[in-house]
Length: 538
Image (tube, helix red, strand yellow):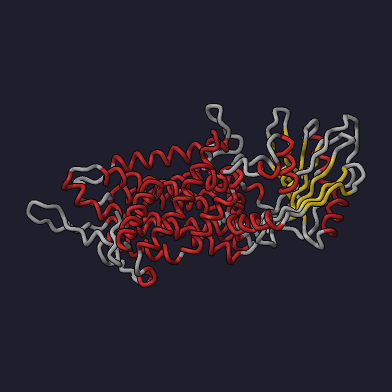
């Protein structure tokens, strides 16, 4: 009975990984980059590389006059305040078409910073890892949800099929055959990151609960627009009131922020929004920062815009608080550099786990597929190369084109930010095409050439990105390290580390691959198609 269960779990583990592995790698990769999304913002948007200041931001002086000019006639406008990882103020408002416009301000002078024309990290890497930038019918959310469920399935089935899971943790034989070495590394990264991988997969599903169960509130609140509004108000603190259609004034925002900080016992505000600006029924929403808390709290205070009187104060219920704590564990928006680096390493370990799982599947089936004339290995191999080295190559190209395109660049009706995204996807698609074209012949040999060429390209583009950053901004490593700009210096150093890793991989792949032993009338015999503990991976 136990052996039957293990075999069933091994089959499930294998095919769940093969089918959804490409999506999982993309999520892990972009999720890893998202741990330092604001650092990528600073690197990719040089105009925001301001010196940090301990002086308080005076919104009455720098934001209100600009908002009166830029957001005239808008239904709402607001600001995001600086923090430990962001040195500029972000002013946002709705234009006549209903689109959100974002402008960066110098918090000391209130001067507008020229539009940097890039989605950068928070606009591209961060949303990619939870919706894949596929908005149509929320398909991106559902694909990520499917990947999250698959990840939980892989974790549970992996634990079941590995009878010696902790013993496998101490086995890593990099000098063995590729099949054995890849399996050892797969087990090592899987066991090492097991708690993190389970947390990330489960918390991702919990965070998007309203997408996957949009009518979950109906049982308690009923159906209809009013019921949904009541649910939003009770769960997330939404407060609204209609316009009075009479002129009104805006009182001191700085005074409202000071009052909010007092009510939060020193908790700092980070988000301010003015609803119905210029109307007598205008009100101001102030949200509390979660930079010093794991929980992504929903603490909010609403003020009457004209009098500054508190209209409503909201704190999440314990039930919603649990969901927000889980969200905080997933998104790591709190300021803790040690944990941020651990999240990055654990996320990259997840990338290695997925990649080595693909490699083990390929190497354990290469000979048998060749004997039977099956194309499965060639197809999965091309998908693997494009999914693993391809997305890394596309990311490097995204950073390079960011430093090459001048501000305000347009082409074929696309603005600069859209052009950067187009380059990312075209390079990624090209990586898949290159892998399919370069698959090794005969089929019994690993597709080293595709891997090697893409690793070389990754190394070249990573170094080029560092060089272009220095050339276009003057902020080379000596400058950034001297002035203590560790965010920009950190991105440069990680790019150089990526280049070294890719170069080392290309060098290893360039070595002559030993010919497998052949027996009369048969293909090469693999080491074994069973993992330690006797289970077989499909």
